[in-house]
Length: 76
Image (cartoon, rainbow, N blue to C red; front, side, top):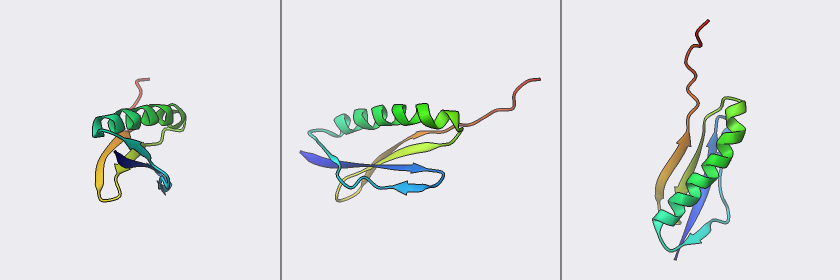
């Protein structure tokens, strides 16, 4: 098993995951990151702020999942 850490980054900074979670595969960690990001996106969409989950092991950064709020001009 590998321990994955799910750090949260938003417009105010990086919030490191100090505990992490153990998974048998990276795919399981990707699913967890997607679930976490979906929950975060619900909150961050109301304040129109980008948020990402940066996933790492004890050795290296593995991947990043991001919610980017890109507002287009609204038609009047």
